[in-house]
Length: 115
Length: 114
Picture (cartoon, each protein chain N blue to C red):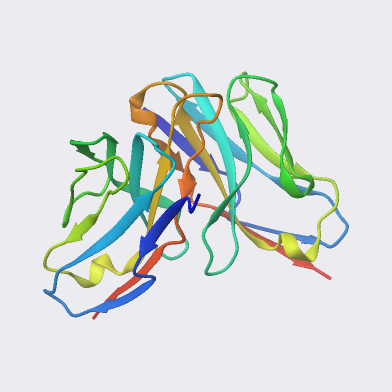
């Protein structure tokens, strides 16, 4: 079994300030973890992924996340928010090599960026 | 590569009508998935397939059917549409090899049942 909890449904930051989107997971398998971004009325774009290699993962657009097994967390960060970062963000857990690769999505975090 | 394509992009159905949502991928991925996304929510798995001829239920399969006769195609059938099926539907595919593991998503189909 696996599950994902995104700890904040809404996060609001000012442009140029840091972003932190929190994600906790549970999994009976060796997990792979992902962050996706979805802009309004658009599809999902992969930001970054963890698949059992380096625990600090760098993604696109300056985002990064750190896999912490002891805390079962995979928080997403960015040093300086940009207006274009305003979107919905989803944390996803998937079994690495079993469970038919099925993924479980968090309910999402809406990021608002104020000028 | 076109990736994952879905048709139609939008559709309005009346209650009780049926329709098929099409999904095709050209990446030779063995795993394919159908999700629905309700407003303000994450994606919920409807059905999935681990290869041609093999399908299985996800979290929310009621009211839907699928088939997988080829590697490329994974259509989703709605029989007797209900307002509760109003949602955005995403198809995805992946391959569990080569250090990849992420899903590739189609652009989605926005379905309204009235």
